[in-house]
Length: 140
Image (cartoon, rainbow, N blue to C red; front, side, top):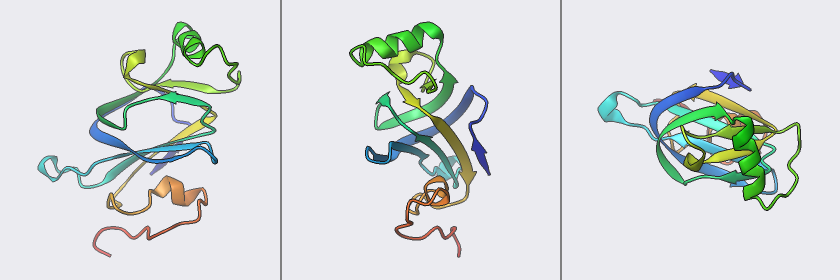
């Protein structure tokens, strides 16, 4: 199930890692790890498109997606050297605090599916990245 530009906040108690970052396409994709000990075999994907700036860890336990407050958006602008960021961008914080990470993007999408972690994320394949590999579901 894909949610485009979902209402925030969203919270996931899963381990995520950066799965794809493409500066030329201004695209960032995070993906959850499968965890068979918690009956979490599927994947949660978060894709940011039109990425203008970001600060994040490559692996994180738990993920909260929320819109930045005005003060946080101003702090983000200052942290990128006062470089002007597009007014039509979405400022998304990746935790409870700004230091947990953030992304400035045009839009984001979230997908929950039963794709194995080793396959191309559904969101990446969906928007036509030129699928390298398979989008087969486990058990196919």
